[in-house]
Structures are given as structure tokens and as C-alpha cells.
Image 1 (cartoon, rainbow over the protein chains, first blue to last red):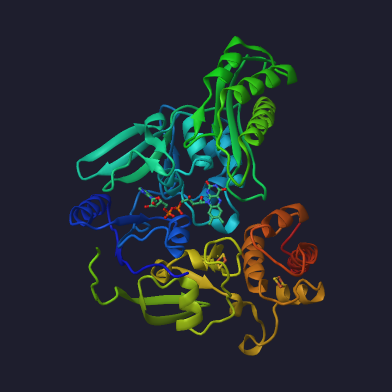
Image 2: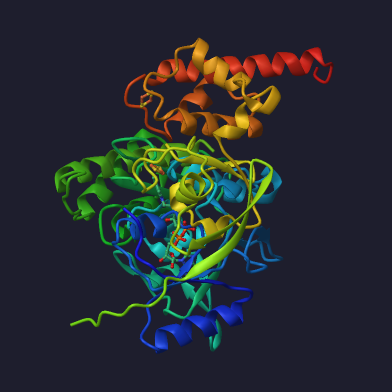
Length: 292
Length: 177
Ligand SMILES: Cc1cc2nc3c(=O)[nH]c(=O)nc-3n(C[C@H](O)[C@H](O)[C@H](O)COP(=O)(O)OP(=O)(O)OC[C@H]3O[C@@H](n4cnc5c(N)ncnc54)[C@H](O)[C@@H]3O)c2cc1C
Ligand code: FES
Ligand code: FES
């Protein structure tokens, strides 16, 4: 189908964007930011979304690219595309953030990744989106720019439910900050067809002993088992007890995760099916994370 | 009840660069790039299927990278270099098939041809970035687009063969190894 009519605006800078959004929303309009358009335009073509104003932020300076700061945190500009992360030069991400690059192959397909942006994914907040899962796993902070200035929102406070975030309608997401390197982390998932949104996605970040043979803690996060990506404390408790890296430990973590979740059922899979996926995927993610 | 209003549609005077040529057009803001190409510029080589990013029939190159022309408004294409299947032709006036197109013909990589422009532009953009792509990588990339009659095997073979020939001709020109 064709989208409903709207008025198109080209944003020049952040302050102007926030002001324009506030004005349009304040006068009863339903403005939307457009970045890569890979979620929004599809929804508009279906008329699932009918914004009456689109504010195109693709020309706003300073929202694109990856950089590390003095404290070792990785800053990813909101307009950075999935493909730019996928092809980022090795030294830029280093072993500490390689998990981000490697996770990109799961995001749709090449022609989606060349246009879709990191900020758009986070703001869209699909329950199985890889970026949302990675943000929750690695405690990322989202930087939002509104009429009153900037604020930082931690991932655990950012995602509120299906397609719902803490962003106000006049705020622009400017970057995501991944605070610490996670050299032993991995994301894996299952979808009926490669490139579709995941039915279940699992990501882990492990803390290994210096010789690499033992596990002494870590994080487990899941997408597709709830309205938003979630950490799984029950599985993390097993990791915290520690043990030799190997199938027995991965199985124990995976079993704890599968027991802890209460997944929804839909056309892509029943709750039981998703529980089974959780078990397999968590074990697989642990194995991949250790072998890095 | 919502009020019925008759506002004039929001329009944009656009200047698009398509296949190296500049085009001026007046289009409604909601005009997608694929509709602008087909209806305003008459470039009907680019096809349109699902209009939500799934089928890939509308794939074109935006600044060299494959992208869905149904998920982009024409206004977003301003200032960018668009290439469509019409640019793949060779010879006088581009009337002859280009090497990638010939490879598709030779390998029987099309039947009805509806999906073909999308696959060609996908492959063209991908090979430009990864001229040394393995067959496995090609297989993964073509999963982006749907073909409902040929099957993917011959499409993969056509792209792989074209890539191999391009690599060989670069070597003949002496700029490899
Ligand atoms: C066929 C297909 C398969 C896909 N598969 C996957 C997949 O497997 N995994 C996955 O994660 N995604 C997938 N996607 C979605 C894709 O990753 C999108 O790129 C992403 O969801 C949105 O990014 P965008 O830049 O395109 O945002 P847009 O579509 O432009 O915007 C999406 C939403 O975010 C808001 N927004 C965008 N940028 C900002 C900002 N900076 N500040 C505030 N609000 C903002 C918009 O207002 C809108 O509500 C798929 C898409 C398609 C078409
Ligand atoms: S028409 Fe664009 S992807 Fe199907
Ligand atoms: S050749 Fe008919 S759909 Fe691909």
C-alpha cells in the first residue's frame, strides 16, 4: 500500500529538531523522526503508522560513527548503520566490542543493514531486536537530546515494553554508550528464515579466569521471551557460582534460564517451543563466548 | 468524529541523481523512491512487490550500497547517487547486456524475471564491496531477496561466475598478485 500523506521536514541540528518536534506535538500533531526508515516506512506503507509530520534527521551532523573514549567506553552515534558496525575496522572495536560487529549478521539482510540505524533500532524497541538485547546485556546508556537539554538513560530504564521506550516525543536519541569491553560475549538466535526477526535471541557476556579455562561470573540476556529484552538473574546465579568452562556448566546455565522464563506464544512458536529454544540458544551462546 | 479537511498535499521539488543523470521532479512527500523511479522518471526496470522490505524486487544502489527503494521516500534520495538496473547495460546507449546480466542469462538464473532487477542490483552492490566473496557469502547475501520460480542455485552460480570473471580480468590488466 501507499503511506498516508504527511509533511516532510529536513532537520539541520539537534536543538532545531527537538524544538520542531515539541511544536508539532504541542499543536496536536503526531510527528515522527525518520532515520533509516527500515521499520517506519514499512509500517507507514501498511498504514500501521500514520504520522502527519516526518522529521528527517539524516542530515544532522555528529550523529554518525563509532569512537572509544578515555575510559574505554564505546560511543555509537544514532545514525550509524548496522552495516557500518558490521564492517568497522578491527582495531576500532577491538576484541572488547567484537560481539557487536558479529551480531550484525543477524539483523535483517544486507540491504536493510545499509540503511537501518543503531538509534532507529533502539528507539523502535522491537522485543527481539539485536541492538536492544545488546544494550540490555552490556548495560548501555542511551543519550537523549530534548528541548531541555541532554539526559542519559540506562538500558534497564529505557525499554518499557513492546515498541515502547523512555524517549519523549520531542527527544532525539543521539548515541548509545557501551561502558565496558566484553571480550567473552556472544549473541545467537533462531528464526524460521535467516534474516527475519528472531523467535528467541540469547546473548551472554562471561567473566573468565585469567587462564580462560574457568568461568567466574557473567550475564545472560534474552529477547523474544517477554515484551522487552530481559536479563535472567537465575541463570546469572549459576554463572556466579563459577566452574570449569565446558558443556556441563553451559547446560546448567541454559536449564536455569529455560526454567526462569515465561515466554509468550504466537504464530512463531508456543511458550514451550520458545522455552526449548531458550535452552539451546543459551548453551550455544556460552560456548561461543568462551571460544572467543 | 474526525473532521474532513482538504489540505493540499505536501510536495517537494526534488533533484535526483539517477544513473549519472540529474532529474528534477515535483513529488508528493509520501512518494517512495521506487514509485518516483517508475512513475515520474519512467525507469520501470526497478520492480515493486511487497512494499515492506521483504521481497527485494525494488533493490537499487544508494551511494553504491544495495537498498530497498520501497522503504525510502524520494525526498530522502536527494544528494545521493542512485543506480538502477538500467545502468548495468553496456555498449552504445547501454543497449547490450552487461557482464552480470549475461552471467544470469548463461546460468539460467531467471525465469519470469520479476525478481531479476533486484537480484542484479543486490549482487552488483555486494560484489563492489566484496569482489573476493566466497560462494557461501554469496549464498547468504541472496537470501535477502525472494525468487519464486527459479530457485537460488543458478542465481548463486551466476553471481559467483561473474565475480570470478571480473577477478580474472583485473589480473589480466596486471593489477593483481
Ligand atoms: C525485512 C526486514 C527485516 C528486518 N530484520 C530485522 C532484524 O532481524 N533485527 C532487527 O533488529 N531489525 C530488523 N529490521 C529493522 C531494522 O533493523 C531497522 O533498521 C530498525 O528497526 C530501525 O532503524 P531505522 O534507522 O530504519 O529507523 P526508522 O525506521 O527510521 O525509525 C524507527 C523508529 O525509531 C524512531 N527513531 C529513529 N531514529 C531515532 C532517533 N535517533 N531518536 C529518536 N527516535 C528515533 C522513529 O521515529 C521510528 O519510530 C528489519 C527490517 C526489515 C525491513
Ligand atoms: S517491494 Fe521493496 S522489498 Fe518488496
Ligand atoms: S525469476 Fe520469477 S520470481 Fe525469480
